[in-house]
Amino acid sequence: MNRTALPDFRLEVYLGRWEFTARHHLTASDAESLTIGELLDLASEQEREAFLAQKLMYTSTWGERPLLEAIASTYEHVDADHVLTFVGAEEAIFWAMQELVGPGDHALVTVPCYQSMETILLRGGADVSPLHLRPEDDWRIDLDAVERLLRPSTRLVAVNFPNNPSGAVLDHDTFRRLAELCDERGIHLFSDEVFRGLERDPADMLPQAADISQNALSLNVMSKSYGLPGLRLGWLACRDRALLERLERLKHYTSICNPVPSELLATIALRNGERIRDRNRAIIRENVPVFAEFFARWEELFEWAPPEGGCVSFPLYRGAEGANAFCRAAVEQAGVVLLPAEIFHSELVEIPDDRFRIGVGRRDPQPGLEAFDDFLRSRRAA
Image (cartoon, rainbow, N blue to C red; front, side):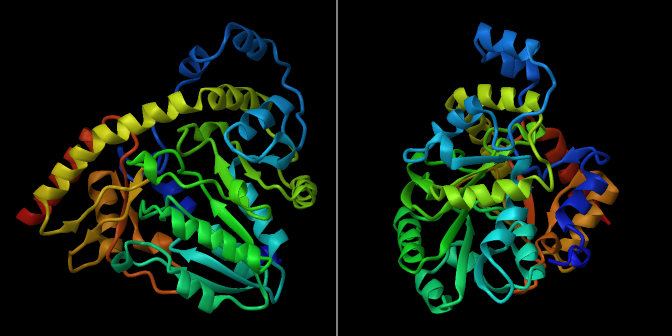
């Protein structure tokens, strides 16, 4: 791949400009973070002592065994030998997209999506078709459409559910049938599952792709449903050990290994994963009525539904100037950060300029919503 051809990563450029300078970050995609102290409070005395005594040395490229075992414990049919860790989810996406699909190969990707899933494939010379998620279809994929798009050259189907930015969750039957369809044709299913565990209805939580398919890859990370992005620790689970071994060799060219404090803290978090996700689901449950009340006051401007899974949603903006200009005005004039539709621009399909992403996973959103409300009132009065 010609690395110099990579365009700006729009989301990171935008948040790099505003996330740490604007007063109200209302578009966060991660759940409320724990402090290091709060996380260590969940640890055993032995784990706390081991953390404080740990030398700041290199770790295994794969990840140390206790971490791999803690990750594997979150799956039904994946063991520690079928997990490869990365520094965040983006490193995993960066290498997996290049390893799974070569120049001239065909891939399907859900759109809108996290930009790198589409961009890395396209810049690597792949022929990419969109699995276009539309609001009129409740942001679901159509299996009939998938089958029509598949070709003999298709090597990859990449999906993201619970979905970012819509918060949609695929139904169980469709997801299982998608995995079967990929297996029948020798196609790798790449499933971005970073928001799994934050479903409003626990019955909606999908199985993990690596549990239901020998060839599928499940992507996860400590950042989203665990609310620990500062650990910068993600992983791929796949029962194809040879594929993971090839990806491990590629990791040598980027991070090489994970920070040892992150590995130890992530292991503690994973061992207490259900407790942490329960906490984060409770925050979302408390926040949803607050956001619902806000959007109900401004129903002439917005159409909003809470996320079915994860902690982001993609409301419709009815203003004449479009969501892109609206979001720029909100952050520049009121210090309220929202992600405009243009951040989810796709080279495959047009993303309409009528939506923005807002997050419901952080504690105490009220100050941000009050600033947002004041901004809207001032515009109405002008």
